[in-house]
Every structure is written in structure tokens, then in C-alpha cells.
Amino acid sequence: MHSLRTYVADARLVLVLGLPLAGSHLAQFALQISDTVMLGWYGVTDLAAGVLGATVFFTLFILGSGIANAVMPMVATAAASGDDTEVRRATRMGLWLSVAFGLAVMPLLWWSEPILLAMAQPADVAALTREYLQILAFAMVPALVVMVLKCYLAALERTQVVLWVTVAAVFVNVAVNWVFIFGNLGAPAMGVKGAAIATIIVQVVSALALMAYCGWLPALRRYTLWARFWRPDWGAMGQVWRLGWPIGIALVAEAGLFAATAVMMGWFGTRELAAHGIALEITAAFFMIHLGLSNAATVVVGRARGRGDQAALRRGAHAAVAVSLAFAVVAMVVYLLFAAPMVGLFLAPDDPERAVIVPLGVSLLVVAAFFQVADSAQVMAMGLLRGVKDTRAPMYIAAGSYWIAGLGTSYVLGFTLGLGPQGIWFGLVIGLTLAAVLLMLRFWRGAGRADGALAPA
Image (cartoon, rainbow, N blue to C red):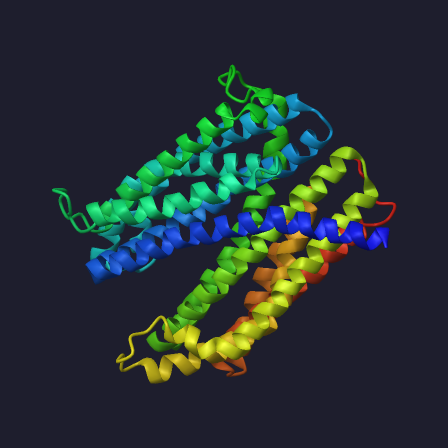
């Protein structure tokens, strides 16, 4: 009975930490959606430039966010072991590296037009996208700072503030978009460039709010995060870098898989690509829940590791997997029962293409129902492995599973065997399932074993 109560308590902890983080990820997702919707109201060319530019920006951002994701397990482990100095060192150098990365990629954003033209983008869209990215380049550093501070606070179990700052950012973004995209309150109508200005404002305000919170809250003052911030700590910087860059590559590999399937879907036609985009938006929203729970697993396992408590590490991992599996089953039921209404929300009732796109989108969501367990398992395994500071091997597993097994199977099923759009999505099932199996095996045969090593990975 005591054991059952302990597992229930562990599951409750995963939910208490994970649901606010899931809400934060959903709010971050809403930031992108609000930009897309409002630019769609403004004009088609600005919408195309915004979507293309956001894709470029987001790819670089998730690569840099690997550094922030490395801060989370390092801070969780150090805080649980009572090492305040290590908490400060890891977070500071995570911020240093994030700022350096943000500055390093600015030239790519500034001179993006030749790259876009080389990718066969229309000249007018490429030119407008370059103008958009030249403004948006200044949002990269504050966006990465926000990411590091969110991971720092999540590791210290301060997930509520992470949620509310992100939710507030959505409302600020909509308001500032309204001013600068459409030219309200005396401002000029700037279209996609106005959306870029709004993003800068939102990221700077969010960064300042989190920085103030980290410095002001009495419970966090013990870490003296901002005292002598300018002093480098090369040892800690090396640790964060070694842990972080494989995470960034793994994140880009997964995002790249879905981007590549979008390209392949475009080979079938506009309707197929539209259905794919709608289905992907729906599955991405559900994925945010699993991502939040995965972040919680990183914290729970990292803190148990910091205490040297192998039993708690295993219990926490079991609880996180069980909670994530339960949400995956719920998502499967939702996809199978409500696919048509969900897809229909993205199309006007009188859209002449509705009769074709809705059934196609429904068929893709039925396939998505099959990969819910695999998708939740692979992202959960990633979170557990990060909690024990194991990132290099998972990077190789993820890249191989997504790009060789997943993408290769998508092409074969979709084109060689003639299964069409559904074949491409069944390829996603294969890639995600392989990643889930291999990553889970790595965790449970290593740190997740009863006699698993708690020494640094």
C-alpha cells in the first residue's frame, strides 16, 4: 500500500510539474498560430513570407535551444544535491552560450535572400522574407535567454511562472501585431515586418520579466544568478556545451523529418499539402502535452540523481511514462472520434476544396492515432535520458531513426509502393516507433535499471 501511495505521489509530481510546462509549450505554439492567422488576414504574400521566415528562424532557434535543454538536468541535479554554486555556474554559462549562438546566427538571417532563392522560392517572397528576417534576427538572443531561464526555473520546480509569462506573451503578441501589422493607433501598416517587430517586443519583455523574477524572488536569491555575471567560467561552459549540442541536433533532426515530409507531400499537390499542414497543426498541439511531461521527467529524474536515490529515479521514470501513456491513449481516442470536426475548423464552411481536404486530413489523423504511443514514448525517453545527462548516443539514435528509417520508409510507402499521403505518414509511424524502442531500451538498460549507475554520464 505504501508503494502504491508512493507511485501516486510520483505521478502527481509529474503532473504538477508537467502540466504547466505543457501549457507553456501550448502558449508558445499559440504565438506562432496568432502570427499566421493575423498575417493571413493582411495578405497572401506577407503570409507566405511570414511562414517561410518563421521556419528558418525556428530551425535555428531549436538548434540553439539545445543549450537551454542542457541547463535543465544540470540545475535539477545540482539543486537536489545542495550545490548552489553549480546551479549558478550551469545557468550563467548556458546564458553566455545562448547569447553567443544568437549573435553567431544573425548573419544567416540578415543575408538570407540568396539562400532562399537557391531553394527555388519566388523572388518577391524571398525579398520580403529577407526583410522580415533582418528584423527578426534581433529577437534570437532574447528568445534563447527566455528559453534558458524557463529551463532554470522548471528545474527548480517553479513551473507556474513559466506558464503565466508565456500566456501573457500571447496576449502581448496579439495586441502588438494588431498595431504594427495593420497600422492601428497611428502606426504604419507594416505587414510581415510588423509581425517581426512584435516578436522582438514580446521576447524582450518576456526576458526582462523572467530576469527580474529570478533576481527578485527571495527563494531564488540564494543562487545569486546575476552577481558578477560577466565573469567567464570555462569549465562550466564546456559542460553545458558538451551536453547541449547533441540535444540541439536531435531536436533539429525531428523537426527536419516533419519539414521533409511536408516537401514530399507538396509533390502530390496543393490539396494534399493543405491536409498535411492541418493534420500537422493538430498533432503538434497534442505533442506539446507530451513535451511538457518529458520536461517534467527530466527534472524528476535529475533531482533523484542529484540525491543519489536510484529507487526514486526508477519510480519517477515509471510514473512519467505511465502518465504520458495515459495522455497518448486519450489522444488516440480523440483523433479517432473527432478527426472530421477538428480538420473542419481550419477551413471555411463554404470553401470549395473542403469536400476533398477534410476526408484527406481525417485519413492522416487516423494514421496519427497509431503513432501517438510511439511519439509520446520517444519524447519521454529523451527527457529521461537528459535527466541522467545522456545526450550523445540519443542524438545518433534519433537522427538514424528519423532520417534513415522514417524518411526512407515515407518515400518508399508514399511513392514507390503508391500508398500516397497516408504512406508518408505511415513512414512517420515507423521512424517514431524505432526511436521510441531504442531510446527506451537505452534508458531502462542503463540508468533505469535497479542497479543503474548514478555517476555522471
